[in-house]
Structure formats: C-alpha cells, structure tokens
Length: 273
Image (cartoon, rainbow, N blue to C red; front, side, top):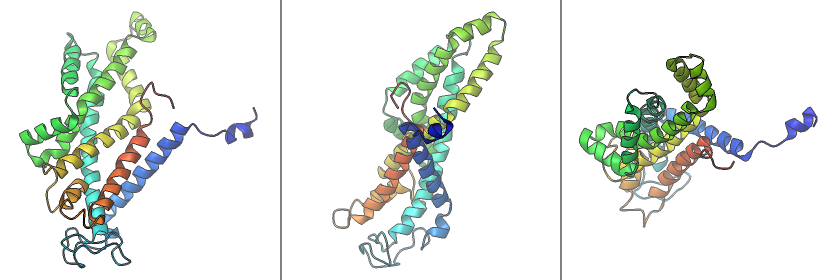
C-alpha cells in the first residue's frame, strides 16, 4: 500500500470519538473559564427580565421564576460544575487509579486486603457512597466526597490491570534477572500513566460529574450563591412543567459535559472499537 493510500485510510471510529470527546471538553473548559466574560449578567442577578420569559432574542435561554437570565446562569453554573468535577477527578485518580496500581506490590498481602475493601465499597452505588461521605464531612467537601465515592471502582480496575502485569512472563524474567521490584513498579507506573491516564481521567470525570450534579439536585452539594448545574435543575423543579426552558438548557449542558467525557474515555478494555 502506498504512503498516500495509508494517509487516506480512515481513523478507527474509537479514535474519532475520543478526539470529539477531548475537543468538546476543551471547548467546555474554555467556556467555563471565561464565564464572567461570556455571561451577560452576574451570577444570581435577579429581575433582569420578566419572570419565566420564554427564549427570545434578548434572553436566548429564557428567564427563570426570579427573572434571572438562564443563559448567564448556565455559564456560571458550568464553571462551578467543571471546577468541582476537576477536583473530584483528581481525588479519584489519586485514591483510585494510582493507589490501585501501586497496591499490587504492597507487602504482607496488604494489597489484597485493600482490593477486598475496595470491592466491598464498589458494590455500593457511588451516589449513595457520596451522600454518606458528604454527611460525614459537610457539603463543603462535596467534590472530595464525590471523588472518593468514585475511587473504589477505579481502584479495582487499576489493581487488576497491575496484577496482570506483575504476573506476566516479562515481569517474571525481569525479577529472575535481579531487577528490583521498585524499578519494575516505576517502569510499569510510567507505562500506565502514558497509556491509560487520559482514559482514566476522562472516565473519572464523567462519573464524578454525575455524582456531583445528583447530590446538588438532592440538596447535598453546591449551595447558593455558587450554583452548579445540578442545583439549577433542582431550582427549576417547581416551574419546569409550565416553563420547560428553566431545566432543559441546564440539563442539555450537563448531558454534553458527561457525553464528551465518556467519548474521551474511549471503550472499556476488552470491548470492541
């Protein structure tokens, strides 16, 4: 096959989907970072228009029951949601992905005990675990609680992959030649970060975003005046059936956020591409 033909060969669908996902997350990051510039009104500004005005040229997403510009509120809420989700994602990566990978080489079968404990926690729906952790720590720690709630499944995924590497033939021969365990761990961890970090981060981002939005909707997460998308949905519950736009636009932005994160994560290991 010629070089030109190779260049014309279409990319695998999974790679295209991941590219779309990362591009979408990049746009969301820029929009969230520039929310104060792009929004027409300050966060929480009431009475900028008539209550429950439908989408129009002046108010692209309409207004809510307090006359707030929903388009501006969505931009500000997206910034809060993205910031909290990024912090929660970092907690999941540290307490789940990295710890799970390192725990395989803990001494005295401590790693096996940790995996058993993570398996017990992983059997609990992450949302319920997040609500429990918020109750123990306070709603101000909702991002950290969401990250810890998503960590058990990330731990199990990373632990099992690291265990397979530790039992592989090349690891056996490396140990037989006298290569220290610490050296093998550093090498495998470097490969893990290089090959799987972006997928782990994107998958964690999708999980914690759902947890954070749901706990806020239930009243356990973000609090006014720093409303996130989940709290916007909760505040629209009384008016949604009469004014669909009050919840439809925050929900659409939240759906796009989670969808882009899932696309960026790529298919699960073992699934076809």
